[in-house]
Length: 353
Ligand SMILES: [Zn+2]
Image (cartoon, rainbow, N blue to C red; front, side, top):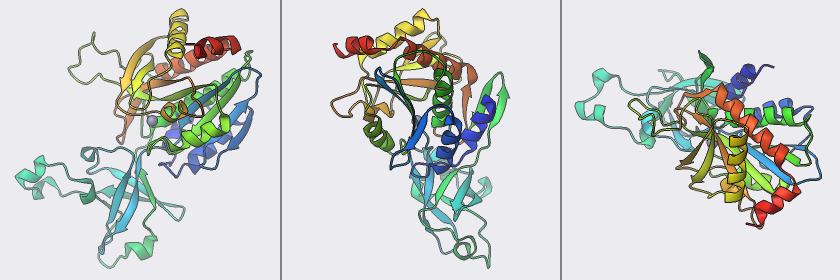
């Protein structure tokens, strides 16, 4: 499978938090020949390449933000709950897929047409509890009976993968299927390279609802060092000031110096920055008002030196984000070099800070 086919397969896959099975299947298939594969009891997929050196965990979450059916109105409209962080303004008029009894049912988050909106309604963003999904409500059609939709059924955005030219790609769920693609490519690359480390490539579950799968996966791996590979933010909106904004598509791999869940181990951070500089791998330093899987992993046991690595993405937590293949490649390059330079001695230096 080509890289672009893999991007498409991963982003088109259905997998809100708690419903990652389809994505886990893609991960397992692509880990074939890369090491031993197992799962933890919350559904994370762990591919291991054994070595005598430090245990390095690479975590990328398989889940995407989505919704869950909360109730069905007497007319047949679906009330929904958010899974993960949504802004209501992103949602009106957007298409979704409801998965019910193994069947995918298309629908739309309905709203009144402009002709019917009062002046003040046009300026107002609806509250989540006022949103609803229309899966084809019509007279004499019993949605509950005919479609067998039930409270608890998962819902995701409908937004098929597209190439934009210039090696940019538009899709839903780059957060964090691009991280999944990074760890798959890393596992394939590193299986043939000499180094002493024990590598654990982990597709985690339930990140978007509070880094839950990262916790259980860390118990399986018990890592000495951990990296989360996830999306970071692009800040190049119309009118941005070029010299002040480094977070751009094709702006290199992002190294997170801060997020809401972790301040990274500074020795590990500087070790990675030095490698990027030495190997001339484009990178930028950034912070994000959110959290990454490392937020949970670095608290495992008596503590794990950890760092989050980002592939910059535009419009995350919406129906369609954009990433650049260059940034993906730089993330893979950087992490490959990190593995080649890590050993027990380096780990001791990092730990004796
Ligand atoms: Zn994420």
